[in-house]
Length: 247
Image 1 (cartoon, rainbow, N blue to C red):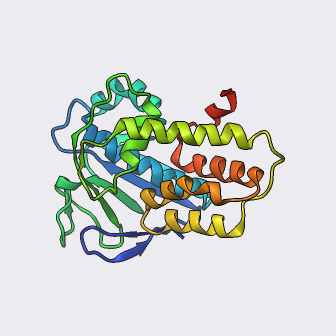
Image 2 (cartoon, helix red, strand yellow):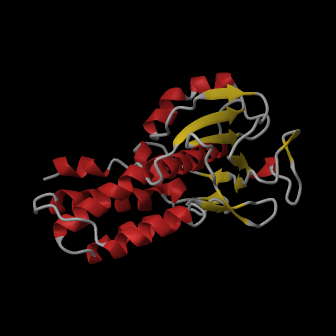
């Protein structure tokens, strides 16, 4: 079960679904952000990661609500699609009931129940997402930008994240996919699967999940490395299969 740390209380809280296995997920964008800043994008990215874990690992149905400007969200539609962020289901002006809330850090009042003027129940965990202070993405592939943002723990501000490093890291993984695809497929080892699920279910630890990808060369045989890379890519959404067309 996905368990997250509520950033208001510091308590570990399991994300429970409704009887229908539906999980209502709310993303609260920064107040006054009418231009879809990188901070807003990062909130949506963390919510997207949560959705992929809940759907891909746990078989839940997730309904995502964004609290923010519908106009800004619509105008940023193509940009968000390039970042592989699953489209939201609805946009509202204020929070409603949810099993999980992902919010810009400035919107979260530690120790309290107030979020953008609305009361959020104590049984609804809130994940605070720190701002993005600096990010140079000129000419950078969007999936490398996604990787650069996922590579910083969500409670830490993004300050000068290296998209160049992310681009090299992405290229290395895609090359590994291309090389491993030439070998017979093999199941993911139980130890690797346990590590992947632990990273996902322990407070959505994207940094640990990406570290597991860095160390996938330790997984044998090559066919198992391929399945491991592609399985994790269902969660992190970095288009690693693009490497199948590489030399």
